[in-house]
Length: 316
Image (tube, rainbow, N blue to C red):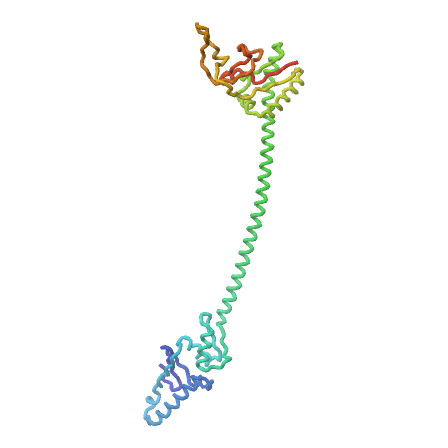
């Protein structure tokens, strides 16, 4: 500890501070200045009465003055004596400092300022935060704009895909119809040239399996369109066709004997015995070899798919 007689030692809240008396005397109306001045005068009178003979004894440090206040905030009070203003960091409450200043009788208009470096840092951080927020908002706007653009583009692509699929389906149906038309024309023209008959029947065995599947999977409208195309094509080749009937799919109408593969077998007693199977009953055609008495032919699915006419052409 400095032993200069001009140094005042203060103990505030458990913390020791030292300041020169001349610094405190710059503001004689404050509490510290008056407190130290009274102690100082008392010590001077004691020293003169002691009649000290040695310089070392006269330079003995004066005892510290104890003050029961916040020792941490007292540092800023002493800085006011030294600098004429109180500079505090952002972590210190200005209200608490002003309360201490009032206690120590500092002027009411005492200047309390924040640390300039921290102010600049705070302003810089604020600017950075504003810039970051602006960029975040811009990124969000860009994201929404990009999403909207690609959403519109995806909608356009979906519509284009739908239109292309519809066009592809139409082309496939046209190609399928043309393939069926020319594949059916070949046996029709062949039979028309070889047989003199008002009716030409084309069975499943005379065309490809795919053509059979395509015909039997077609709707009534598609079959009607195919029939019109066949009539026009036959007319262009000089074949006078009156009508064309395309066979529908196999439909079970009753359990009976198949007239083609399971005809009735008469017994000695005159009864008929045969295996009953799911059959599709169709009106008998003139060219069919097995005609039942009631004018209908029973077809099992196997015989139907193999032998039943898939196309019947009525010639003029």
